[in-house]
Image (cartoon, rainbow, N blue to C red; front, side, top):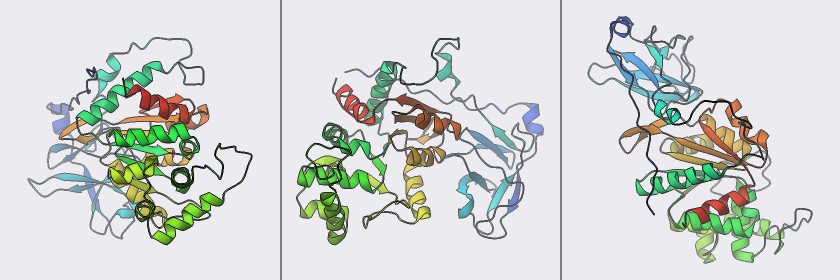
Length: 367
């Protein structure tokens, strides 16, 4: 099947005029103590941002919320690192300034991918919001094309999963298929999503039941899985010792798909692989996000908000500046709209059952 998808090209900002020539270099202030930013720091957003260093306007890569720009201003080697506040080190040179029009050597550029919007007319229409009544056929078709493009062009697709997908045999199988077919490169999730998948693969049950019912509480097999993984020493060792072939977890291990499991205050038991230190979990997620080109977040509102806030709207992928595609999926309008409220303006939302969503993606990519 011919993929009709064309990646939007980044149009760099033209700084070749007297006004921008007259603007000063960005002001840099050294960090005095690890983890403490200088006063007046410039906090970045998800949009492309340029900083003037030694007379050169340099585009920041991995620009994201709640970070600062650390500049390297050695002549001829000018560059930028985007750093979380807690990761600042003594001696780092942080960009300070609150004006974003270039007058302080800082310029936020929102028009780099304007051709994306040019194709859609900005006219009033009935039911423009995202709700259960929205028709998402166009969004599905677009996402099929994006995922095919990513696979063909060595993109990096990260899925953020809630428990719901693992609570249904058909959606768990669909997720396994997507891993096997190369449409998933990394997974973020919690303990339960992993444990239920492994329980289904080993015992044929979900929550101790062949046909899952939420009003029953038969969790013995669930805890047997967690205890078994801990006894084996890792998820990979448990899967290999029990010769598990089914499920997205076993598929991820076979296909070298990275799984990041972040612990929560609600966890009763966790795996040896779980990041129970919140900073370590955040660092592991950020390392994946930095190389992700598409993110799909399904029925995991807290993980979705966390991931969305650390995801830029653009990045350098395979040597080219390109937009990062973000999709959020949940049955509740509140959940998918929450991410936009927290500042991730580039996310596209689908209000639907996540179990149906995963199956639709699997079937759609077979066409």
